[in-house]
Length: 175
Image (cartoon, rainbow, N blue to C red; front, top):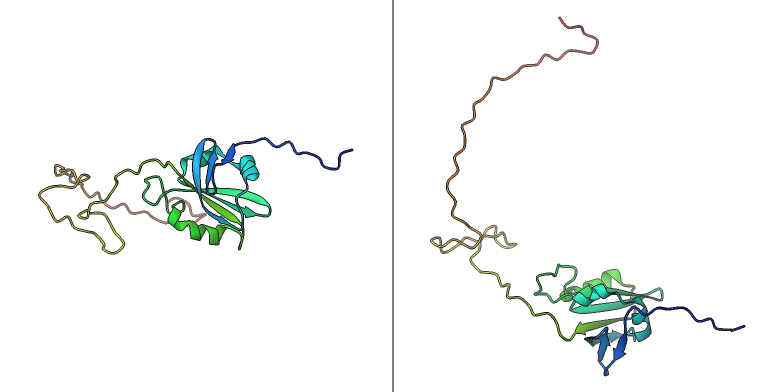
């Protein structure tokens, strides 16, 4: 009899440590930005990694109850990013969703997808937090989403005579 039984573990990803702070996961290079309490473990990453994480700019792995959990984050300027998955909210994620004082690591993708130039114009008519509405300064030129429309003509509505209903009690016969 063998004292140690080997577990049949299938590798989901191939992790190769290239340098002290450089690692390759499925031929994609990541830089180890932070390794808190030696949370980075190559073997466990190979077992638990999911290919969905490839689309993110940052991958965070945290440990809780001896289980490795992943979360992906985007750059703040990305169009795909929401408030919850922006890298600037990493500290909030660690405080709210991770066990207190747990080991974790942060990986940054070396070759990120290029950022699109999606700057906002200053003279727009969208609602902001500080102002109710920001007025368009140049009124001769409409903004991109402000099309010149023909005035709509509404049909005149006629007011019909009010109907009156007689309320009768239950059990009362029609008269």
